[in-house]
Amino acid sequence: NIESNLAVVVEGKRSDDNTAVAPRVGIIMGSDSDLPVMKSAAEILEMFGVPHEVRIVSAHRTPELMFSYASSAHERGIQVIIAGAGGAAHLPGMVAALTPVPVIGVPVRASTLDGIDSLLSIVQMPRGVPVATVAVNNATNAGLLAVRMLGVADDSLLSRMSQYQEDQKESVLNKGDKLEK
Ligand code: RP5
Image (cartoon, rainbow, N blue to C red; front, side, top):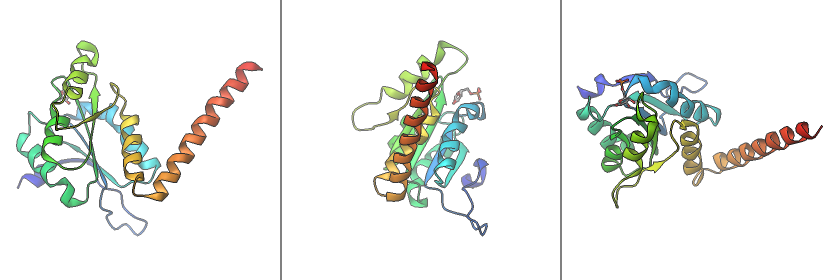
């Protein structure tokens, strides 16, 4: 059974009474070596209280698993997929080809070429198969973009996003005030 081969790093969040909550966002990555970068996306979703799952799914090393994960994600209630990969980073594009839900790609900087290889692999998608690509290693923005996507049909998330923006603005203005003193 291919599902039992999923390397689950973090399960979907649990509610207060410890019953499993269906994840709304799937965070996947090509290797556990991507986790130090990709965990920032999970931290953002945690902060906004969005149920999510984190899994290792490789386009090259586990292609059958990638197919199974991507083609069934929407049936499990996944509304956005964040996919991170480095080097020949085919994961986000292949997943986008297999799912109807939005895919956000995170180019992970590998040990060579400074992440340019990952960036170009992910951003240069052909017409018809979109991947929303964030900056190299910027999994934080992938998390924030997922929250904004969900916020379109979730007023509570939308207002939390507005509050986040307000807090960010205040923090920048406060730093400016301190410099002037
Ligand atoms: C990609 O190859 C992964 O996304 C990772 O960024 C890169 C290197 O993987 P490891 O060799 O560290 O497992 O598939």
